[in-house]
Image (tube, rainbow, N blue to C red; front, side, top):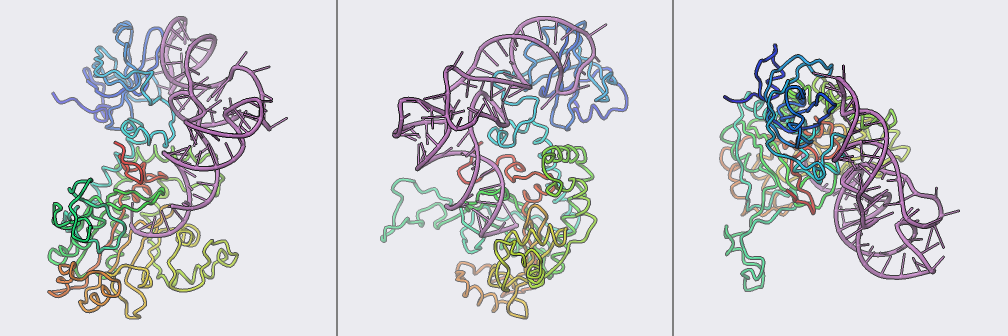
Length: 479
RNA sequence: UCCUCCUUAGCUCAGUUGGUUAGAGCAUCUGACUGUUAAUCAGAGGGUCCAUGGUUCAAGUCCAUGAGGGGGAGCCA
């Protein structure tokens, strides 16, 4: 018979005569006549309390039952005599499956620092914090697919290995099967990629957008959800070298449709997590409050669930880049020269201190910034009639910064071609992209959503390395 | 890559102006305890003070270099 999870068992309405639980020991306590084991199997935040009565089982049966050990226990599920749990298992049989040497097992029933847990990422799943994060992560992945499926989108797998390095989204990781030592050389003494696996230099993808556009111009509404790789030497709490990105792309959508889609989608998936992961969110919320206890009142963040509800229930603020510059210019913050970079002229890129001011001080809610100067944005963004700005939009979230970057794409062949020339994008290599503008082009739009950045926002965690199971970042590819 | 802070027991941290034998809490082990809730109480064990070099009669403490980590910036999602 299939054994039930602890989540299923403790959801029972009544006592159960014979139940079996399987999992890992989180804690054990004992006295002369009775011992208690807190057993967790990952199905829920809650551990089940196993009662070992030495009148029923010998004291020997507790041997090796240390924190971290795995076991199977059988017995009757009874309403608990203790106050902190509804049920407990009165053990009649305990089978130790895998021991864990208490002198060597690094996790203790106490609070560990996130930095320490990062060093033992192979074991950190066994903590409440990381099991909660990873349950939420699964639900968020599921909610995203569900949202797009409900809306009639098709999921597209775009290539992970790509030969084009024209996307300009950042430094790329080279993919090669050539030998490290003495690779074949050309007559000029350079590495001869004609002899490489693909016959040309190839890299890991930095974005599936360009391929998603091809699919959108036939299937209508598509989205990708895949791994993305950036070889940037960035060492921050919101960058990873390997992360997951969601990139919807829709034919006949203009920038407003695009913003509506992004806002609706974000609200849907956040609401999904509020509805399906309440227990884990509450745990993370308490954890955050505990963490911030020592902070001053004005530095404390909004309670996690309140913050998520606020985003779900309020419209995002939509402002153009030009309006944002005016707001920043006229702000007291700018006049008192509190910005490190003073806002003086139109055309400069916004620093993260400016984005934070707009989101956290001025509007106090998510902000969608649109119509950036064309000089600071990518070649494929549609040029506005003023010929100075492009139909770009960035969604900024409090505490995270940019969570979405998107645009209406340039669908006019001639305009696109001349922009590619201006920005030195090799047009021969991009013939397939240009072809969509030559044959049945339509206005279309899309955006990229950083999955782990959304995870940061939803879990309230501070470092992106803690919301992905095995983070990859400069000088680190452990596990 | 830049700025800044940090590295002392398994974990979290203290260590005075450079001065004798290196400190605490938790964890671990042993014992006690009538059902505990990160149980409680008593006792014990546990140290390459990140590494290398230097200054000094004397370095955990000061200086230099390196490594690793945190936070911030840039780049971005």
